Length: 119
Image 1: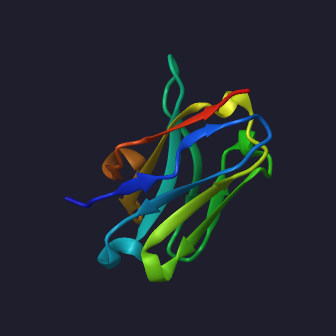
Image 2: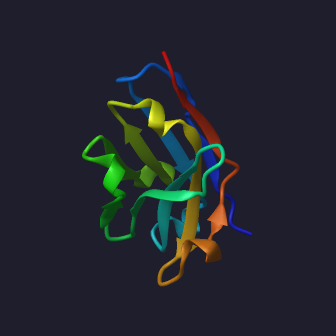
C-alpha cells in the first residue's frame, strides 16, 4: 500500500496564501502522477491540479493562475502553492498518487488537510 502524507492546511484570510505538501515514497515519486483534489461540505470531490513524472502540469479552470504545483526531487514531495485564496476555496484538500495511465480512483489517497479561507 502506497503511503501518501499531506500537510500544510490551515486558516487564512481572503487574498492570502497557503502551501500544501504531499510526500510519497521515493520508489514511486518519479513513476506516478501526483494530483490534488478538494471536497467542500455538501459537494463532490473535484480535481484541482496534477503533475506528472515529466513535469507536465494540469489545473482546474477555477484556479485561474492563482495556484502553482511543483516537485522537489530531494524530498519526494509535491507542493501546491495557493495564492489569492477566496472563500470558495474552503475545502478539505486531498493528495492522490496514481500509476501512469490510471485514474484517480485507482490511486492512493491521503488523509486530507483542511483549508479554511475566512475573514
